[in-house]
Image (tube, rainbow, N blue to C red; front, top):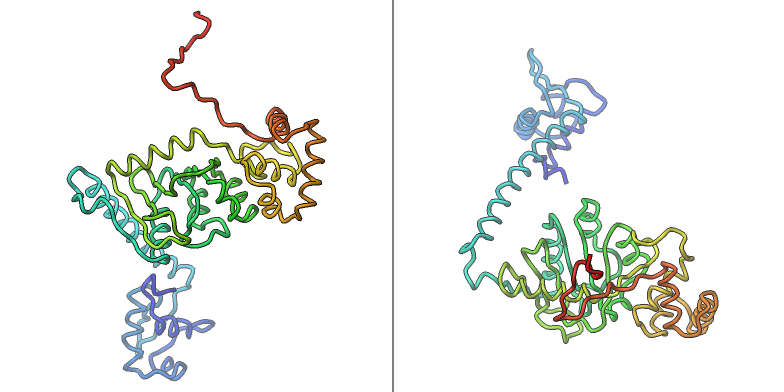
Length: 341
């Protein structure tokens, strides 16, 4: 790992030989490490140049170690400065490529093949985000979902906004606690739809990722879409699905009132309002179908509801679940002041 800051294995070995000792001469180091003087000489020179050793006056020449919390920290700061400079160059190149005429028509769409390469490209695109990531989640998957994506965890910690739309079938494949609930607790905003037409990721409105086909069990090829009419269409599609989606409000969601309902009932209600089949909900909750039915009947009784629809309405009235915002009918103008004042 230390090769990242320019230290080779032999450099670390020689530097470690100074631990708990004072200055050492070339002859002493040769005897202690078993290395020849010819091999040690360039290593010691490199360690001095990197600031890990200092040469002392006198004959024979002696070398004194600089404490690692000082020397290694200096190397790290130097590497950080180099990375900062590289990032400036990368931003400049990205701006050049994003400028009109920067990309040829053939460069507006990249084809990535192979599940591993697709997963790597998705991770790369996610980690390039600076402002917002939007996505539609549905099968198929390059890699089966099991835990919250590490890139999403890191980006949410840096206050990058995540808005996700989950197809109802995707909820049956994600783990509630280690994936969905953890993401919501960190700030992800999520909604659920039935029959999402395609899965997609759009990062900062500048680049997107979409499977080449959606009718296969696994993703074999994907398209990376750069600024173009196609990317505009993907962004608009997400906006339409987001508008019509049902907010997903699992335990840990930032929008959930604390202690509004027991965790077990909150999970059941959240999945119930998505329209998932009863047996799928029971499986997701880790319950037998009979136990699930008993818990559902008890919850409906607590709400004073006789049907599942009535239970959903009463749960929403108590703030236990969130209903989608009502949208004005298309073609009708909404006035700012309905009473004419």
